[in-house]
Length: 251
Image (cartoon, rainbow, N blue to C red; front, side):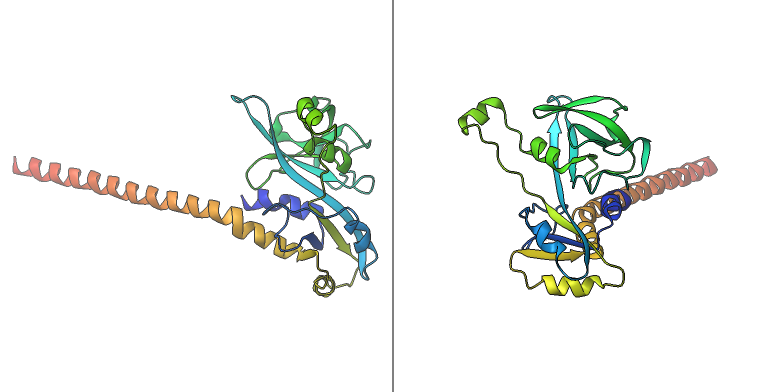
């Protein structure tokens, strides 16, 4: 569970996660940041790169067979998914209608998946990329993620005047220049009134102390109850064997 939950954080390889003020980041709770934040961070001393990061979970399929997918928007064209450990296929080669999926979705290369108003082709398959809830991840460009997450049914769109809600990035991932300490840049950005900045280690700890820790407590409780029940069953078996032996000896 720990490995699955932190796989995406490790794969992104960011030194800092810049999120909405007073939030814990895209994996722990809802966070939205303005698109211009990416440009603001690029001019900060010590910053090598800054990219928007979009993440949200959607559910598709019918009631009997629901499919939950964690949609990750990659900052195209700087991030095409080249760093993802692919077991087959390739990284994103176009700005639209291509996706990389985790193999737990059961899709094959070339599969066409309807999402929103478009149909996306599976061009790459990876493994081990699931959310903290066990949902498989799908990687698309940031613009495609906006289209998927902001999709509205035709009737709803008509009632909204034809406008689709804007989908803002969940965070900005920042990589630092060699030799620059993450804590120094974090302290400098702490003066900004609209963001909260977490180091990669802090982002991992927030995730593990939240969703994962609760799940581990539930599993621990189950194991404790199972141990108690098993001990009672063993004790009853030993008791019955002892009583049977005493009965045979008296006879």
